[in-house]
Amino acid sequence: MSDPLPISVCMMCLNEERQMPKVLARVADFAEWIVLDTGCTDRTAEIALQCGAIVRSAPWQGFSLTRRGHFAMATQPWILWIDADEEITEEMVMELRGLFESEPEHASYRINRIMFFEGEWIRCGDWYPDRVLRLFRADAWELPVRQVHESVEIRGSIGGLRSELPHYSYRDWADRERRLLQYAELWARQEAAKGRRCSPMEGELRATWRFIRGYLFKTGFMGGRLGLRIALSCAREVLAKYRALKTLS
Image: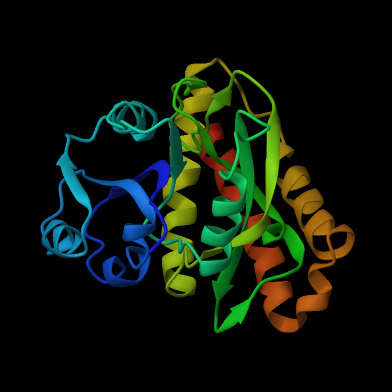
């Protein structure tokens, strides 16, 4: 068996027992896999331990602060940020092994997520490509405080991996709608705290552009009926954000 990769995989969890066996299938390929329990009431922590992961717990302090503390637990020279609704594939492990045969050229790497929804892999529209910065040196990151959509900032160059990261974000349309509204509210609070205001019709205009961009310019129409529904849902997400901001202005 090959030596474990010099990477700390960091994954925050809240009641994800359903996902654990699949997402932790490649624990042995990495030197460290830290599951952060942020208040689970199911068997998430128990299953993670059985799969060979390290389990830590921490109170929820919001996305940015909680994730900062999580990354600080890493003991390996590299960190791979994985969410509980994502899956590391054999192709990615093989690419990482090739990358670490020598010193990696860059300080961080983007990975392209691919969404699985309604029984299909989504390869057009606003959901694809979805390049996220997830692999980075443990001594080269910062994470600004944000209410939602937190992301790392890197000191150094950024490369990209060829392999994709399967993403099983939404169980169904009801789940999509629930989280859409949740994130819209968080975004509105974040922007209102910075003094941002919503002008008349701004939400409607931005939502219209989001639909046009996703459905036409990003070829969402190639996804058929599902592509249309996704484009409409993305436009609704924008409208919900600005309506929420308007109530706080």
